Structures are given as C-alpha cells and as structure tokens.
Length: 211
Image 1 (cartoon, rainbow, N blue to C red):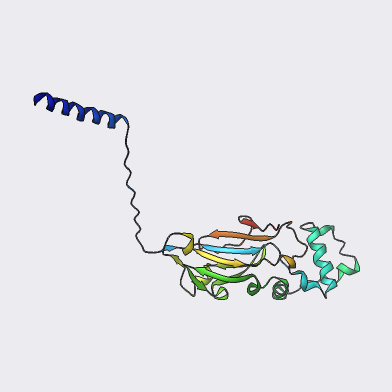
Image 2: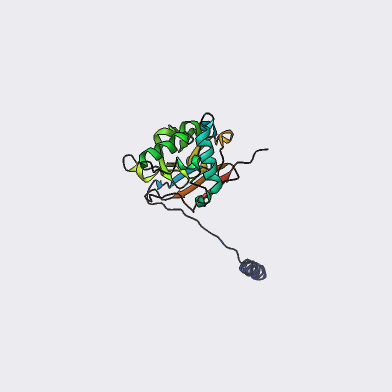
C-alpha cells in the first residue's frame, strides 16, 4: 500500500512537471463599455466627377470652357484669355451665382444615393446626408457636425458591419465629363463628427472597375 501511494505521488508530480514545462496559458478577455452606445464618425463622400456630361449637351459654349479649364488644371495662365471666346468669361460673377451654377452641373444626390441604412434600419438619404461644398465639388456627409447641431448624433449600439452605416451608390459613370481623374468612383473621408472638415488631401479613393 505504501509503495502504491508513493508511485501515485510520483506520477502526480511528474505530470505537474510536464504541465509546467509545456507553459500552458489561459487568457481571459472581458470587454467593458461604460455606455451602451459609441459615437459614430462622420462619413463624407465625393463623386470623382464634378459635372454631369448631359448638362453640356445643348450648351457648346460652356462645354468648351469647362473642357479647357479641366485640361489646363491649375495652369490656367496657359489659356489665352485675350482670345475672343475666353475674353467673355473674364468678368467676375457673384459667389452665390457661381455656387448655383456648380450645383446645377453637379450630380444630384437623389440620383446617386438610392438607399441609406444605419443600425440595420432604413433611412431617408435626403434626411441624413448633409450637402458640403468642398475642393472636390459638391459632397455629401453622413453624421456631419452640421447635422447633429439640429438633430441627434448617430451612435453605434451593436458591433458588426450589419449595424454600421450602409449606402447604395450609383456613380453615374455614363455622365462623366472631362476631369482631373482618370478613373470612376468616390472619395471617402471618415473623421469625428465634431470636426467641420473640408475635403482636400486626406481621403480614401474608392474606384469602380468595370469588366
């Protein structure tokens, strides 16, 4: 009986040594969240194309002007402004008129955004998207600071992409005009909704590739 007890004790000690040198690790993860919801960031989207081609179908004068400006890029000094055609555009126009003209030529949000969802709930895109005038033309932002000034901020209540922001976009590539980009798609910027961000250099380009 004594020998049996000693043998059992030695077996137990041997197993302990084996377990020790195998370095077993037990990890316990506990996620704690103070609030039930997390602030969702602002998402701003800009079509790579600023002006719709169809807006120039019956406007050869503006078509030629915008095509020349796009081709010149920032080097507008290379345009011969003494040319009778370009000379008619040298007079400044009021800022509000220029903005309205840009808006007339731009893609319309109701044509680009067919469905918006957040937290797996359908939303009216026109109600939740804020129109912005940026370096990229007219852009549209979800959960933007201007929106939450008169409405509640969107908050994520559950993890997973099903409960984030979803938007269905028609880029209207058939309407692409001459421009500085050689691809089709949207530029997207994500930032805190309290930042009144003007689109410029920091953005993620999302390109659409057609087969």
